[in-house]
Every structure is written in structure tokens, then in C-alpha cells.
Image 1 (tube, rainbow, N blue to C red):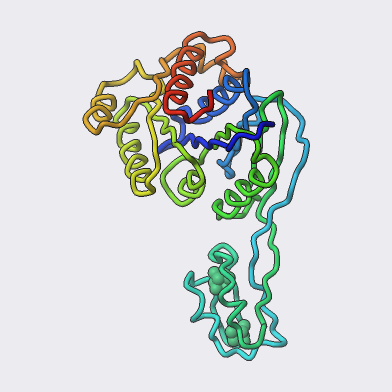
Image 2 (image 1 turned 45 degrees about the horizontal axis):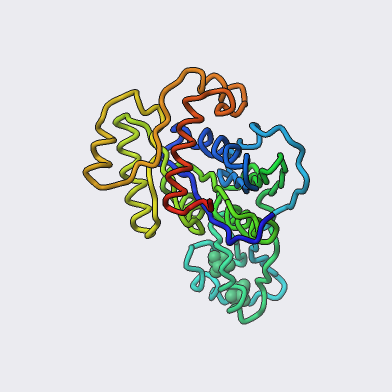
Length: 293
Ligand code: SF4
Ligand code: SF4
């Protein structure tokens, strides 16, 4: 570990299947030649970064979300909690108060304001966070329990876990969930810089536009990495130029990269095209001082 201030780079994409995991895992491994790196798999519904590192789990922590637990014997059935909840997570039917765990945002309003103290907050298991060490890479992954629908609280718990355990590690990569909805916004919230992975297809451009709009709304610094850059059309590159959106790196299409990725190996170690793309990406990040030289 070092004493440098951590620099957090989120790797996101407007949709799945663009090469986000390929970039996250290979970039972490490439950077780890010289420095300790945290790689956080924040795609908590389908984490798969760990498949590429074949190391044992060192430590696991169950994660919980606080939910109000209705106490029928003390409740006066005044119905105030239904009015207090801004998320429609509580209903009153006859003589029963029901809390919908999936709608609850753990804001504590109902619990604090209930005149009869009939809604104490109780921990409710939502998933697990695993810490895995592979050489200089400290991998942290979280897995949402089956049946849980809200990824955001677990993403927040994972970020806190990293802050509590690995904050002295200078380079932190966040492999984000795909898309542009709440889980992505939560995953990039702490990032100092965002790499948006895209591909030169009409779908890729459409989803990149949404991702760029999201980053602009959030006020995040970002750049694009084009995967399979020599396939498809020039439309995406032209749009980036027109909008003055920086392109940090281009990963060429190479069947060998896809084959190696599919076998759960880190393709840059044997593929010079991917190695060159990572080298130019790291140079770009160095120039921007996103990664400490
Ligand atoms: S606010 Fe408290 S006392 Fe009133 S209905 Fe809700 S749980 Fe019962
Ligand atoms: S904790 Fe907040 S979100 Fe959850 S039920 Fe109570 S008022 Fe609603």
C-alpha cells in the first residue's frame, strides 16, 4: 500500500457487452505491473471480474439494509407513517401496516416520526462483499442476494468497504453496472474520472450518447474508449470529434482477444494489440494525471 491520495477511475458503458469487463480486468492487471490497484466489481447483479484472477476469497462481509420493522402491539394505527414515506413503501390495510422492503430507501423518516415508536429499524440482508487478493490487485466484489432488486444500497456498501479497508491504495478502478440508471449513477458518484466504453455501431453510438448525457448531468470528467474500433462505421468517432469528446484509446477487433477473454484469461498478457491499446490508455491517463506517474 502507498500513502498517495486514491485516484478513482470508473469504467462504464451505456449498455452491456461493449467490453467493460475486458477493459476493467486487463487495465487493472496492466497497471499492477508497477503499482497496487483496487479493482471494484460494482456490477453487483452479475459480478464476474473475479473469474479472471483465480484467487481465493480472503474475507467476506454480509451487507445489510436497514428496514422498519412494524410492532403491531405498540402501533396505534394512526396512519402517519404512510404519509411520512416519500417512497410509497408503507401501506395501511385495515389493522395492518405493511412495509415493502424493495421500495424502502432506509431514510428512517417513518421510524423517527412514529409517535408510538412502533417502527424500529432492523437490518435486512441484501448481499455479500468479498475481498480477493491476486498479486498487486486487491479485488473487491459484491453479490446481490437472489430476490433482492435494489443494487444501489449494495453499491454504496461496497464503496464504503473499500474506503474502510483499502483507501491507501492509490489507483482504484470501479467496474460499473451497464446502462445509465440509478446503479450506474451510484457507481460513478465517487469517481474522479470516467472511461465510457463503446463500440462503433448504431446501437453503440445511441447508448454512448445517453452515457455522455448522464456524465454531463453529473458533472463528471470522462473520455471514451472504443472497443472493436476497426469494425462498424466512423459515425461514433465523427460524433465524438464534433462534440469534442476525448477518445482515450481504441481497442482493435481481434478474434484472439475475444477467444482469450472467453476462456477467462487476461488477454493483454498474450495479445500485443490489446497491450498497445492499454499502453496508450495509460499514457492518456498519465497526461491527464489520472494515474500517478
Ligand atoms: S406512525 Fe407508528 S403508530 Fe402510526 S400507524 Fe405508523 S407505525 Fe402505527
Ligand atoms: S425508512 Fe423511509 S423509505 Fe423506508 S419505509 Fe420508512 S419512510 Fe419509507
